[in-house]
Image (tube, rainbow, N blue to C red; front, side, top):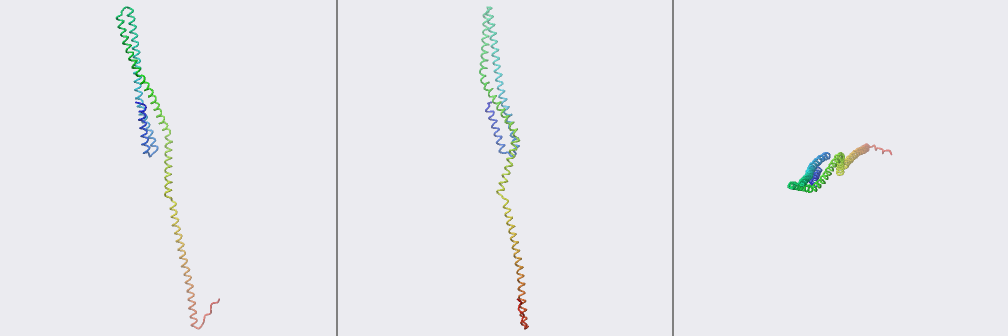
Length: 244
């Protein structure tokens, strides 16, 4: 499995999980804790995939070493057979010498086959080794990011709660701007002013009634004086005018 496919799949999963949590998040702390759990789970998935890749690499390396060892072994057998052929040929046994030379040729052919297999596997092993190192580096980077997230958890939660509180205050201020309570005070003041005006009106009415009563009393006194003078005239005793 390639580095791109492993981390591409994990990155897609992480991004999808994060976006889903952010969209539905109500409690910032719960969201971050869930993010940490999901990120940890994704790291576990990456570790499993990388372990499989490393396992395949180790198999290739093992086969390569076996090919090298096999080639060396056939090389030793070829030398032994060739040496035996030389010894027999020196002693005059040419037929037996040819037999061992043929064995040496067979050994040499097997040596060449094993060397070719090792040579063909070498580029693949080199590529896999490079990929594995990159996968390990990427995994270590993910683990560092997880540690960073864990270390910043308290800070992120505090910032989220502060932002939430600021939003509530802003909403409250906005509501106050829309529903100004001073308008209620204005209505109360107008009602009190009307009550005060009503009280003044009643006082003026009461004062007018009292003045009218005194005026009526004065009119009664004038009528009484007229009646008295009329009676005096009839009795032949004109009443003296009021002293100045």
